[in-house]
Image 1 (cartoon, rainbow, N blue to C red):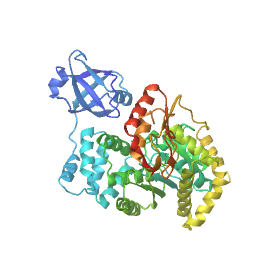
Image 2 (image 1 turned 45 degrees about the horizontal axis):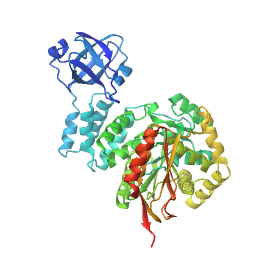
Image 3 (image 1 turned 45 degrees about the vertical axis):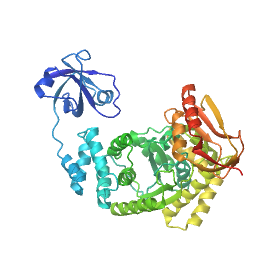
Image 4 (image 1 turned 120 degrees about the vertical axis):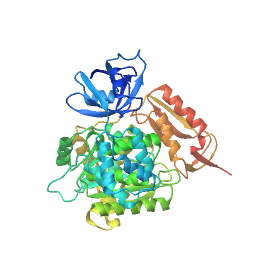
Length: 497
């Protein structure tokens, strides 16, 4: 039985959803209820979707409604057929994990393959993620997961180049936009770095969001290859190409669950690096009381897991534990972080010193990773590349190879928030600072966010500016200001005696 497909205009993010009347002939014949998994076919291809049941006044009985993402991806010519979806056999492995049975390599391969084919609903994906959270994936299972995630997507290879480099930060530190500087330093030194980066997941900006204020980041595989051929490096948005595509699906559901599993994190990072062809990877783990990784014991456990899985998969990984006690740089938000990056690369005398210092630290570790050299010698080399202007010249080359460089924009609404008491800054809450920037509109509004005007150790008097909020609308500026006024201790001041 054929049904005419219509677009419902409903945004279900990336989940495929269809809409039928309960009294439609198909619903009755197939015995379909709300939340059933159904197979939709239009003669060219088929997909699995979740059924929502609607009132008679919303759809005709011979029509089926598509959510926006399903309509765009399937692009139905006219009519479609609807049947029950096949049973997802790999869910038995997920149920086994819930009852503490370890995944085999075959279990993980089947689960990830079915997720890649769209057979899992968001509810089933959530069950898999929850069963795997809380340290319940052992080291071997993380290795199986990483390999399976690579194998279901496209991969980049680089014939004739033995060493391909990449760098990743596990996140949780606002303004920590070292990647563009490190890539510029490393590629100026001759390292090949096809860097694919994510957009923000829970932060006010991802590397791709920041780079998009400076150049084009939505590059296909051919344009990535061309950029690397011309400049030795690129900084592209990884979501535009199918490198470890299941990772993007898992991250979307993890965000809704507010889960951040250690095993999933390692598999996510290393699968993306392997898919991009990297075999030498630098991992930055900021550690601090309000960072994603809050203590050294957790950081060391994560360090060990990265090393174990990388060794199993044949990757050379260098893990660096860095200070995550407060935000890095002044700008928090895509365009504001881009301005900090440009200031450091241009050797501006007013560039944020902490961002410059950390970029040099990580750049030195990257150069040391490339030739197993001594860190101090590598730091001197990184410093010379940055201070001489070679890194800035290389950054311009990369931007030109990606379609041209531009200056980041400025928000129309700006307001300073002042200290309500005198004292010394003794703590800055990373999580609430990030929340403040997001309430101002970042990263959706690229020029929105905030400038942090103090660091830990600074002495301030009543009325001294602490934060400068940037917004693209008056409403978002007001939201951010109200949040700050209710959370003044996000910048904690120790009262002067």
